[in-house]
Length: 414
Image 1 (tube, rainbow, N blue to C red):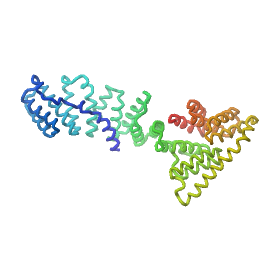
Image 2: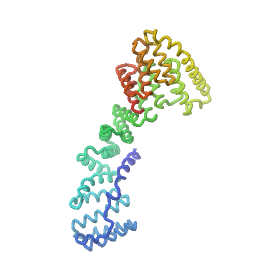
Image 3: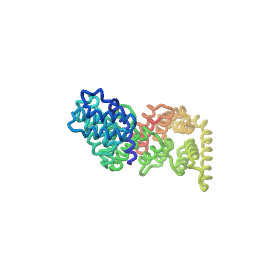
Image 4: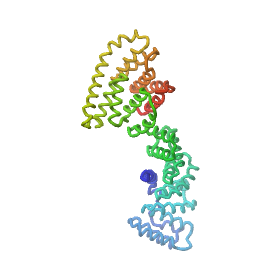
């Protein structure tokens, strides 16, 4: 994880611009009343060397000035300011930070803004210098004064990770993420990855799952959805729940191996009356080169796709018959079956209409599945509030309650 720590640290320390670190680049002639000629001469030579990009010469001349005895506090300040500038140019972060500590010890020569910002600058420099004890010392003090600084929380969190204090790492990243979320913004993906790793190493399964959940919500890539759904779907499942976890994986691009695709397709086609979902999943599997590449199974995969397409056509052929039964069927099952066919064909308006009609009659088979399918149709049509309300209505269902909650999470991706 050192690479991740370095990436975060460097991202913060790059904020240390030359202007914030800088010193005057002019002659000390203007400082005649404050800097003696004995000190001013080598310092002026140092600055001239800086202009000519002769940093070693500049450093030697500044140290020559520093060796002069009986300097005034202001002269020492100007020497330290020049040293800080040169060290920063040389990417000597530890030396720069230590010199800035000396500058901060002379607040009478600093502007109020410098007095306020130098502690954070020092923290960042020590982070770049890989001195975690100093980072923690200054970072904790900074957050006492600026408790809402999420950048510093993240830097401290990364530092704690490096020192293997995973609980402190977890706490700082949790604070940073919560603060950003409260402002209505999206947490940095690196923060979420750190939180996941800290929680995992600390053995906090709840926090680890929450980190996976936030990664899936804010960065809905298949590689973030896959581990989250794998963890959420662990344990013994009913056939209905197993199918609906597969449906979520299909929707998020999180189906992985050939068996994942073909098993889901078989369930969609044979058991749950949505062969269109089977076709969509299988075609995705072929496009991703997961299906049809192994000579021993290519024919079987192709045959499954052919059967799924045939099932789509067979389902469409049932539409007139089911439509004629809708008003006569007191159970609502004909209406739900018709809604499933329209859902399978991605005809969301018709799917919503018939699923709602059937559900209202209250005597359909697999009522929770009908409700969940309705919520998905509403979501895919863009009716997010209605979809979330439908998903919420399943919160207490033993088979589909957890799955419905994940569909609610999914609704924030679209």
